[in-house]
Length: 95
Image (cartoon, rainbow, N blue to C red; front, top):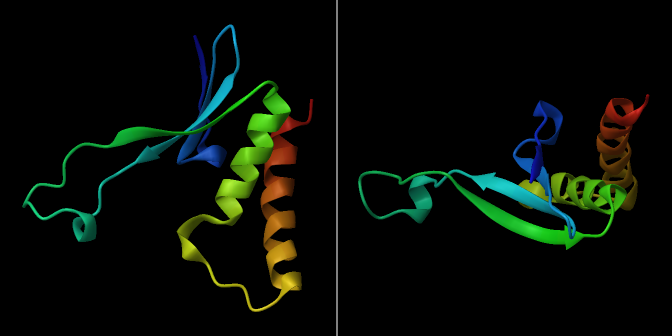
């Protein structure tokens, strides 16, 4: 299995096996979700399986823009955020 991690994609990463690309998120437990004193260990949460690398990257783009319960005051503001994240990812993918 191949694993693709990059600071730009964090907290997400991609794994590749003979069948597909899978997008994962590394989730660190937060105190608000934990009743015990210790928070527990980080874990990996699968977000989807994709037949192409491009599909996996598009999924990460969507996840990053819509992460953290953001509230956008307009469609324009949402599209601007989309554009910024898309350009960051596109710059890494350029040969």
